[in-house]
Image 1 (cartoon, one colour):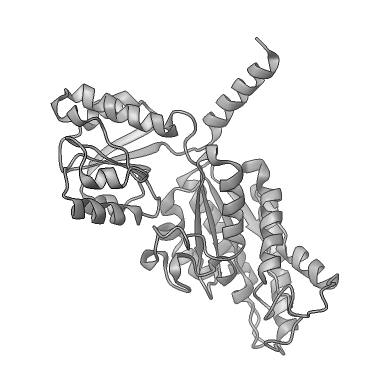
Image 2 (cartoon, one colour; image 1 turned 60 degrees about the vertical axis):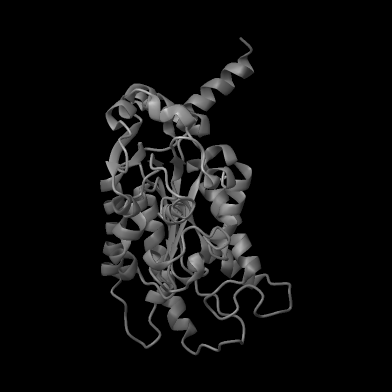
Length: 364
């Protein structure tokens, strides 16, 4: 065998084996008997199959949803729209007798099991479902989930809202699902370059967010989507501007607890830790307390670097990037890279995305 072909085969197998630590979760909506036991046997140990109600399905994070109900056209539309709002954004298969007008209109969104499935035996139904799942890529490489968490720099009004929890944001409008900033640019690059890897990327930034707030919503908004990679950019809002002294020891302990909680859920979870920055240069929003903010941010940077080293995490030094851009600015515009002392402009977000991808490449 040609050694290049052999190398490609080995590389593909290794990539598939190590791509995601999580089994693929298949949820069968309990409107008709889908033969979950037979389906579990057909799919094998890399999948977990369960039967749930629509409400239970909506509150979970399945990878695949299978429904056997023959909904009316309106029922199909609203059920699909609701299921698209699940944070994990599952693949959805509506299976029934024949194809409704809705199925014909939405082939790009759903796949239909053959029309005579209602006449098949339980094993044959399971095999039909398994075949559709495998035909859509699950037999090659399961999806890897990347959560990017932080404050307003990360938020970018993702899901059509700013400074609001993930539970009230729009999860099915893909025009705004990543926000507008470095997260969107990371998603655009990875999804464009590697469509075969089936990445799932989640923005979990929230405007005004602090580390303790991220800790409070960690389980519900970050760990709930079963991430394989977690990126964190936090700290700028923790830097006081009133002369008070932050509790840096407590801040570090809280930060470490986030990683420990993630590893308790998934021991193979990888981390991308980003340094916060204070980049005041312009005159849009004069900040007389900039030096105080910068001094605290520098302490947080040192903590993040220490934690990244100890946990074997990828370190993305945004502080060095931004300060370097400002120090060597050639634009002639003091607001070119950071427009208010905190928030990066579009070109800075682009540089941040480039650096993030370059540094995180080894774990993607």
